[in-house]
Amino acid sequence: MIQKYNRATLIKAIWLSVFLHIAILAVLFMGDFTSETKPLKSSSVAKEVKPIEATVVDGAKLQKAIDKIKKQKADDKAAEKRRVENIEKRANEAKQRRAKEEARIKKLEQQRKVKEQEKIRADKAAKESNAKAASAEKVRKQKEQEKKKAEDAAAQARSKRLAAEAATKKADELRKKQIEERKRQEREAAEKAAQEKLLAEQMAAEMASRNKARQQQMMSEIQRYAALITSVIDQNMINDRSTMEGKSCKLMISLAPSGFVTQVRNVSGDAVVCEAAKRAVYKAGTLPVSKDPEIFKEMRNIGVTVVPEF
Image (cartoon, rainbow, N blue to C red; front, side, top):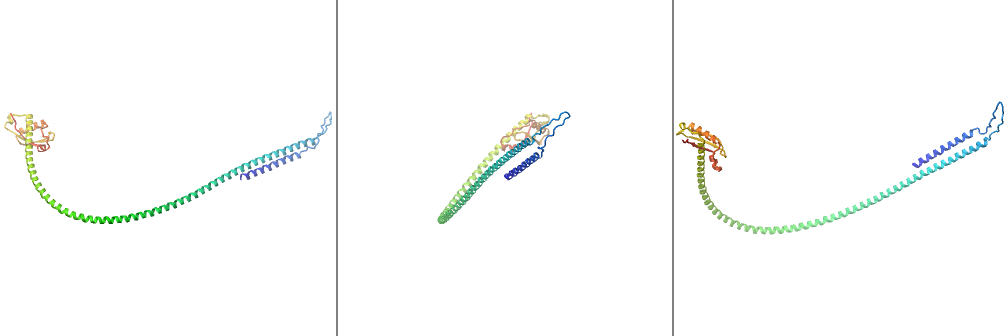
């Protein structure tokens, strides 16, 4: 396409050059180069002037101009020819390069297709080989499974037979052992019942003895703490012989585990003595208590009798 475009441009340029040269020649030839020069007139002197050889001089100039135009035309034509040849040369070189590139691409494509076909054949062969190997492996595994099933069946039959024999033997032995075990258990149960009965009787007696001792101990401790509490009350109590002599008061005191007095109630007795005793309890604030949880449980609400001393 480039080559056709360059040729068309070249033809247009040549025709334009030809038209221009023809126009110049026409102008030169149409000029009056053969006319003679008229003599000048003067009032005083009339001098005769020879005619100029215009035909010879102008013809040489014309020929020189024509030769120049022809040379320019030939030079332009040669330059245009060289330009066209150069364009055609570059176009041919580009065409050759394009052809080489297309050939190279075509060759690469052919190589790619060959390799692709080789890969397809190799993949197909590998697939067929894998399929054959898988089929052979499947057959081998199937045979192994069948063999294993047969061996397992034989082993199971042998195991069942041995198990049946062992079960029969074991059942006989178990029956004998069960009879012996039942007799032994009966003897042991009788002995154990007698021992447990004796032990229970001994433990009951021991517990009764311990509980009695514990109760006595707890009562003794409670009485001791009641005496201590009464002593604290006496120390904090303000006595008046005229109103309190020969009188008493019984109080019920509620205590916290720390001995802190939480409540004091009158149970019975003289009101004056009770009021003085209550003030003494609250004044003390904290009373002696046992650290033993069981003893404290029994004395957390403790009753004391206050008798003023003079």
